[in-house]
Image (cartoon, rainbow, N blue to C red; front, side, top):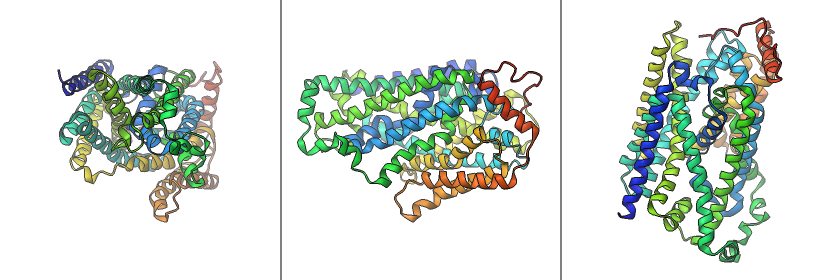
Length: 503
């Protein structure tokens, strides 16, 4: 068989495995809550790798190694910021959000949690949150499909349209039938594939070059500054702050923090944090190392596209079937993000728009069907947008990350840790944060828009809440009960049933 044929075999095996996992998840999905949140029964390892894989996307396997290959350690500031942000998110947000979303009306989406937590009887907070999710994620999903199409075209020698439809179609298939569990289980497998790719490829390259000593020698003196402290300190203060600020985005990413809500218990957040951070640190170190090894393997300017450094090393060093699996790992990174975003967008449509408009509570089976229909509609719209790749801006990934981080991040933190947050304060802060993300780039400061957006949201939410807060006993009780659950108080819920979900 030719090398190209082996690559296609690997791709077919990967696609078949993803669809099989989706079918398995579909068998385990019995209700609307199962479809949207896995019945709050996600094991720690699955939650951890699912959050990581849906977070990193193709940036980990292509973007980061390519940036290191082209520019050196100066590009590692984003990785440092993301690591800090992910740790803080797992350490402080994950356990409390898992407990609080169940206490506050068993909320299964972020918008419904905001409404239940703050008793927003106008329902405006829930609807605005859902609209933000719907708009950003539809375009975000389309960007992922464009990336998948371009990657299929360059790596497997196919046509863009065929690749985009394959990536979109397979992702839609296992997400449509398997729902949240399908997305999470496939994310788990995809996370393992990503980790294997970024660890094995650079090790094989070092061996092929004759060891670390030979690698160091092969990197010319003109590139030596890329390796040392100068590589990290050569950036401007604004560039460093902007890169580190990516970590702020974690607190407000719906497709990541929904994994916290799906854990089997708040106590298991600690185990998930350890697994998730180990995966993230190893993956980031492998990606950064691969970028540097690529300097020795190809020499700078030796690649037409620096982002293909891992892919090119894999094809040069491995059997075509194994190299095909490495290439599939890149698709895995892209598809894991798309599937997670499809589920969150579907939940926003069903839970936070449809159920607000239609006040009655439909049967769980009907809601599950509606959820699948919404996944299908959003995927079709995203694929239609991706038919013309020129109309889809791939830079929207960074923009959407800032948008979600600035609109939702401060409110997640305040709702979990500040008793006096009000619905009016949350609405005002969220709108200010989102608008700032749109307006700030027009000022040309060079500072990543998440920084002012996050800060202004926080300030406005606190100021308005202090002006409008009115104490409600039920809200105080839920806040207190959440704290007691996290401290392991066995009597935290004695004498009181959790409130019924508010629709």
